[in-house]
Image (cartoon, rainbow, N blue to C red; front, side):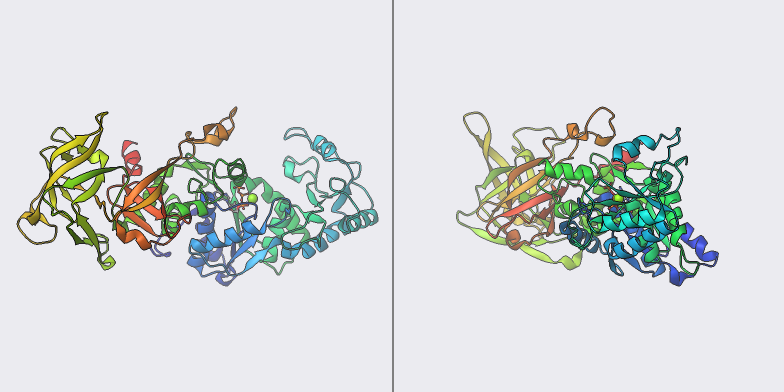
Length: 561
Ligand code: ATP
Ligand code: MG
């Protein structure tokens, strides 16, 4: 769908209204403002698609701005991962910015506030400050340091900046209103001492601006026209407005803050803090573990950028927080992969079939279409010989008429090959079937044009030639959490709902055309699902991740509702 023909979301309506009221289109400017303290997740994708989507719709610049105010939690690794993920999603930013680029300007403005009597240095402990803060219904009380002289405040602030104070000793507070019904307006902290090296400014600073002081001012510095954030910042709007009032120049653009709902996904958590715990406590193997709802985890799992963008588009932008079922995300993965993923064959639970009337030592290469959804995908050759594997679940000694797979005395077509008939089977001492003996109908070869090749049999099975099969490691995933919203239980930690069986590793047997598959290649194993080559693969050993199965559970959910 083109950007122009889509129906507008409520944020776009706000922009349209501003344009109608005379705001110049040339001055539209957006940004995506991550804190580099973790990897991006599927919730962020909504914000990325919203901001960059606006940029595309209005042909306006979109900055990627890192709100890097907390060196204690931020790292270059996260900056790099975020950039990679935004690019991978298919978006290009106008410029790459950092709040840390503005540390000097923010400091100068803070001095200005002190000079205007609108900020002061606090010497009390954080406990004392918390105590005086009051509650939503009890007003706070003024700090004994609230009326320090401007000179003393300036001196102390400079000394803080020069590293003369320990962490946790002094802070700079805005002098607003300790009686405000909005707790955030009760003299919030603007600066704290932190003797930490910053990933960009190194040891230049030993005081760091708070996020609330930095975020809105950075939007203003960048002349962002529409400053979009999630609902939890609605209460911060009053504070950001107050901060802006202190430095605002009439000739400049005043960013308009609007809030939209966070997106939550079922059976997982979307909070960097919680995802970090999963990584640190070893529940998953890193931020890009395919079980993670991070963009990098989804990429490794086999999701395409298109499927994530389509998902974000479908759920749209909401005014209220809500939970989206993960099966909708899977629906979009399946829908896109169906169009682009080449079809191949792999057997994950093998049972050997011997075709007794096929010449011993014989072998032939059959033609197989790569993608019925895409003619341009071409075709490939598949080896066929006397011994093949089929899926154990595709054979039963006896079964009723509804079983369209292979049973003794019954016939099935082998995909892209022949019709075979099961004649007998062998078992081990415990009664497990170890081999099936079949005969094939030579004239039924797929695509050969003979009458027999067009003969219809009820079932078609996927298979792999034993002699040419590639052994591969196959990683099968399930939901990471057993509960639909693991982090919403009052008395239980979300970690209690971890699904211990979210990863299963098995051995698979694949057709040889996959020999040169590259990392991140995505394929459909026919009748099984979509799979993607994992970076753990080595030249001698392929590792595949299962992205999603073929069956659509989302539409089913919709129909039952
Ligand atoms: P987290 O709670 O995961 O730590 P955050 O809001 O602190 O997230 P930021 O790096 O500050 O993470 O987020 C960058 C942008 O993405 C912000 O504008 C934020 O509002 C938005 N965002 C974060 N999480 C979601 C979500 N679940 N749904 C929609 N937007 C989100
Ligand atoms: Mg944040």
